[in-house]
Structure formats: C-alpha cells, structure tokens
Image 1 (cartoon, rainbow, N blue to C red):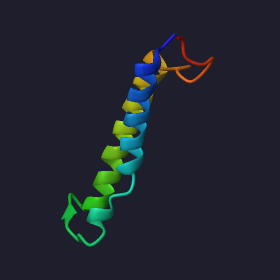
Image 2: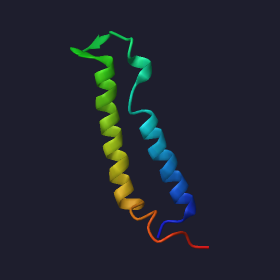
Image 3: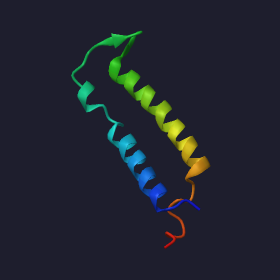
Image 4: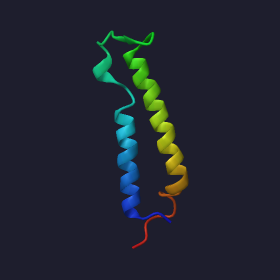
Length: 71
C-alpha cells in the first residue's frame, strides 16, 4: 500500500498536469509549426505526458487514497 509521501507526490504531479493543461501563455502566439498552431502542439504533447503519467500511476500509485494512511 502506498504511503503518505506517495500521496503527496501524486497530488503534486496531478496538480502540475492540471496547471499545464491550458497553455494561457500561448493564446496570443500565432506561430505555425508543420501546419499546426503551436498551442495545438502543446496540447498534443500534454496529452502524451498525461497518458504516460496515468500509465505510471496505474502501476505504482493505484489505490493511494483508498483505506486511509498508516500511522
């Protein structure tokens, strides 16, 4: 069973993913790379990163908030 430290690490990882989900800083950028706007490339990269993080979470952290913490 994952411990308390693991819980805080996963909360931080998911909070970072959430914060990076919408690229506010790219809204005024009109640069196009390989036919797609930069903000769309950001979103594609974010989806790949989120999928990789979730894959790791299912292997190592699944159930981290189930059953409470051990003292």
